[in-house]
Length: 233
Image (cartoon, rainbow, N blue to C red; front, side, top):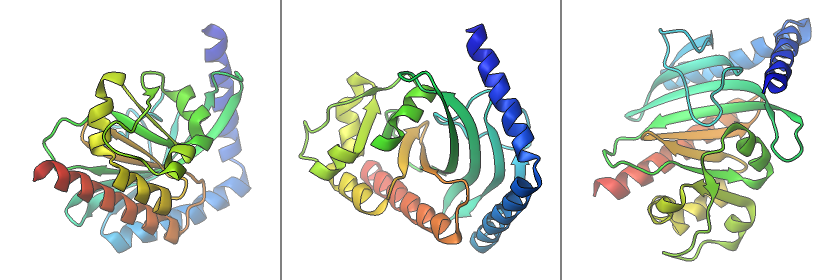
């Protein structure tokens, strides 16, 4: 454990030094400009960098939260009646199988659901991000789904659904085959987590464009509406 903590400290120090280089600072300002314009367009408030211990801002949690993550370009607001938050989070995780460090740059969007139903904790991850998820979160396990309906083959081939085994049926009721079809066709490589009545969307993207942000917002609002309509009717 001491060796792992030392590796994480070294990795974090390297990241801090890398973020101080002129090239990185220029790219960060350009990305900040894109996200700030998006926030202004959507009526959100842009804060820039935030720290985990800052009581003035709500910490974006989910499976990527850690003692070593760094958050930048944080913004919050309400869009179409939903409370939204956006952040760029970077961290270094140690993959379980290969025991190697993997640098991750997540574009994260959270949407607070309206339903009062206690939803199960679940994660729908693109298979090319399985190693990063398993390195950052160990409590959920891969599930075999399909008891309530037939899921698209392409979805099962490209995504892994994680949760607690005892919650499998509830998770299938939340991420139905119809929703899975849209995730497969419209969400590109985005991964989804639902925890504490919040939808988290993750995309590995250190330099998002306006189109990337708009698509993530559109997909997230659609998913939130689908879930709310299902459990509020």
